[in-house]
Image (tube, rainbow, N blue to C red; front, side):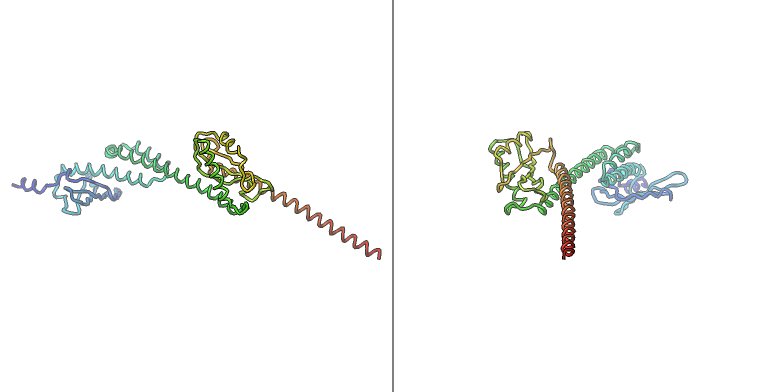
Length: 316
């Protein structure tokens, strides 16, 4: 009769507990215990498990309780050990899953990869396949984020270059830098369509001395055109210069570039920027030299006038 009552009371088995997720882990083994909390379903209903690993003089033991309809008195010892197995897997998976979620660098990915390979925990090995998949996905996420960040940085390079041009460009008969770029883009597109070229415009940017207000009388309008397509840069260059294209009587020098040969605008423009910076420095140096020469001449004229004045006074 007592055995029948005990069997009736022990109505929970390990397989009744599903969807186990670690939500908290506390390691206090120095004080003699560890504690873990899990969300789960017990016979399909949401619940929370609390597991305590306790150290004793003659070894260790565990206690597993649930927040609703406590299972501790309703589960047989043999089923407790089976449930412990499931919870230990959840602990290993949950611990490393959380660490993978927090990774932000490829170096951290590699470090965790080595750690997983070195860890021979039997429960970890059961969930290792899932963790490898998540770690690989994290690595791809970091790579994609790096590419996006690089793309944003590259876009900033072009935007910054254009902003400086807008500030320093001397309008051509009322046409600003943006107007020039639009006209060149339209001309290039017309050429592509006329010649049925395998080319697609990516972007058009005004470059050269005029984009920094350093032009001389008769300076060309230099424009760089990034494009995609199979046509060679030099062949495209020759086609774009067949008509001696001009804007308001000023010759337009169009330089077509591709990512695979010259490089994208984001890598090309920094070189242009540095070249123009040096050109501006040289201009300022020449200006400084001319000013010094002018100052010396003015000083010499002043001294000459003073000398002539003294002579006239002496004659009187």
